[in-house]
Amino acid sequence: MNFNKITNYLLFQTFKNFLLITFIFLSVAWLLQITRLFTITNFIHIDVIEIITLSFYLIPNLITVIVPFILIFGLLLCFVKLKRDNELIAILSLGYGLNPLRNSLIFFCLIIISIFAILSFYLAPKVYGIYKYQEYELRNTLDFKRMSFSNFLNINKNTILDFKKKNNKYEDIFISFEDENENIIYAKSGNIFSKNNQYNFQLIDGFKISIDKDDQIEKLEFLNYILKIDNKNLKDEKILDKNTLTIFDDYKLRNYLNISFKFFDVILIIFIICFFYINNLKSINFKTLNNIYFASSSISILIINQILKNSEIVMFNYFFYLTIIIIFCLVISKLLKKYE
Image 1: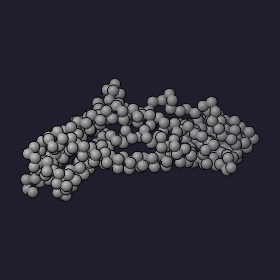
Image 2 (image 1 turned 90 degrees about the horizontal axis):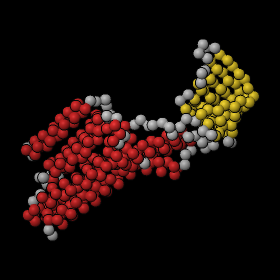
Image 3 (image 1 turned 90 degrees about the vertical axis):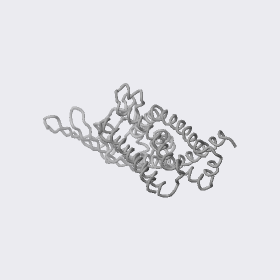
Image 4 (image 1 turned 120 degrees about the vertical axis):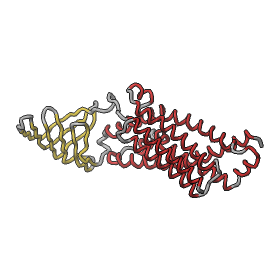
């Protein structure tokens, strides 16, 4: 066995455990998201296949969120297992010192950073943008034939719909909409369908109340009434969500704070790997308390990072707070080793 084979073996073991933890974390995160999609779309009876297909577009974005957490547990799982099987001691006894361990972590870090950067800076925002568009289309392109009920549904910005449905018949239809007046329509029965990018309401036996700007009320009773409302979808609109912005979009919009967030996510991945090497691997210290300190400190930094990113914070304060927290964790780690 030579040095290259040792490094390759360590790299293989690291990736094997990393992929195992990735599968577990990603499966849990994906199941939680698909459960949420089923919950919010259940009342309009969207096909299961459509929801499952939609959920796959979430995977790149989910990976960018959970990769740092996967690193923490993947590294611990890999090297704790190597330590337990005395493989680390065997490698050190060959006389190469920590070089194979350090080199395998460097190669691993470079590969993970490259993949993460491609996902975070470009691929994940692009795919997430497709997800947001298709989710909007599913939730707002209404198929009334599938719907079993409506609970004051907003079919556009100015229109609210409510009805009961029995044996494919629409009853107690309530419509509130605004044009130049405020309008309320009630009908005992009727038919509702979509055609030519419009919602068509064929109403039977009801009334319409209109209130103008001068608060004058006009009431119309009808036996038959036809109402058409434009179905304004997202085809000509642009979704405004920072998670759909690639680094090129951020640069065009001069959104330097969002760019800094993405770069600091890469820095945090480097920090976790370096922190693991300094805190655990350098001294071959895989005692339970030391492992807990590494995991809890790293997770705390990641959670604080997410909190800061979701808050209204200026760039200087963001870097300052996280830098102080990282330095504090490194100092505590050094003190623990000194008094161990």
